[in-house]
Length: 192
Image (cartoon, rainbow, N blue to C red; front, side):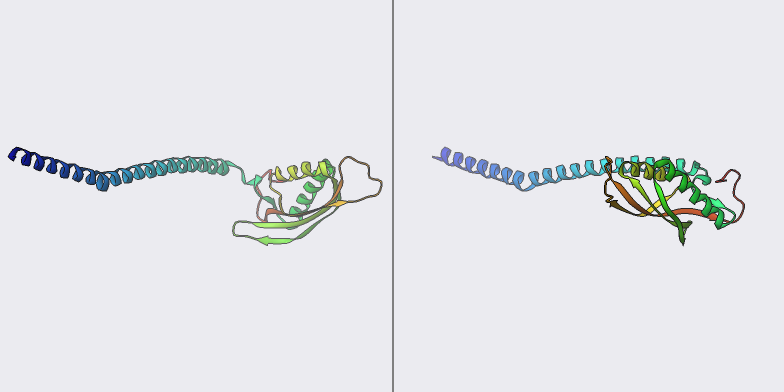
C-alpha cells in the first residue's frame, strides 16, 4: 500500500508540475511571444517607413539641386519698369492665344499682389475658344517660362444658333498671375 501511496503522490506532484508549466506557458510565455511578434511587426513597419522617408528626402534633395540650377530668368518676368513687364506678359498671352485658336476679347492688368518671396502682376483674360483648343492653350500657359499661373478660371458654353461644329464654343475668363521683378538691372537676355 505504501507503494501505491508514493505512486499517487508522484502522480499528484507530476500533475501539479504539469499544470504549473501549462499555467506558466499560458500566462507568461504566450503573452510574451505575442508582444515580441507585435514589436517585430511594428519595427518592420517603422523601418520600411524610414526607408520611404529617406528615399523621399533623397528625391527632394535632387529636386532642390535641380531647381537651384535653374536660371532666375526662367522664374520671373523682369524689366526696368512695370509698363514693360506688363507689355511683355500681354504680348506673350496674345501670341499663345493666337497660336491656340483663342479669339481674345480682352487682356487687362488688374493690379499687383505682394508676397514674401515675389511680386505678382495680375491679369484678366477673356476670349472665345473651341473646347478642343482650350486644353492646348492651357498647356501653353502651364509650360511658359517665366510662369503664367491660372488663379481662377471660368468656362461657359456659348450657344450660337446654326453652330454645326463638332466641338462647342466656350467663353473663357482666366485670372492670371505672373511673378515679376521691376527695377534694377535685369540680367542680359532676361525676357528681352
